[in-house]
Image 1 (cartoon, one colour):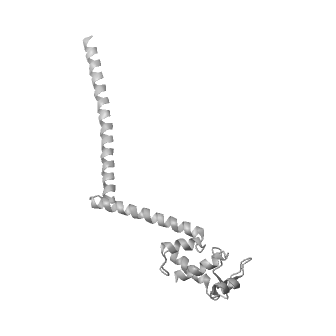
Image 2 (tube, one colour):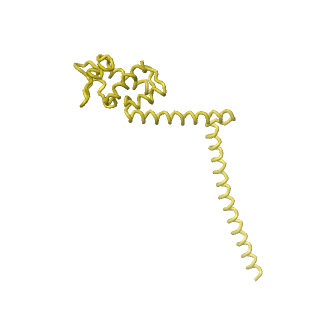
Image 3 (cartoon, one colour):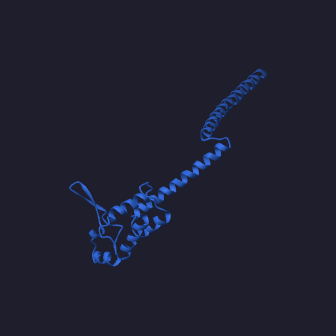
Length: 177
């Protein structure tokens, strides 16, 4: 099915039809009517001649076919599309550029998520889970806080010791006189 859609689309594209901006359907009295090849109207293009010269079925619902192809492109299971077919569909203008960019970003994000999952799995294999890391960080933070408090206390003890020593020395000085 995908192969046939791409063949027809390539014929239309090669004859100057802008497929990226083609209206795929319209609603008439609450019913969706898909665009047929015969319905295509673009300035300076004789669609009837293209149909005749290429022996195309003018009643082919090209709008529905492109819609299904786009669903497959997005990864929906309605239609299976290979990477090569995706690239060809992009080239022919069947996939709007914005949709292609969005899908590319989504693929990049999936790859990044997979990398993170792989790294997390390696940590688990090594006996360290993300929860363990968080617990370890919490324990280290508690220990550090304890050390800071001990340092403050010891600093105060040193100050108190120095004060007492100076008081004792002062008292000794008064007694000598």
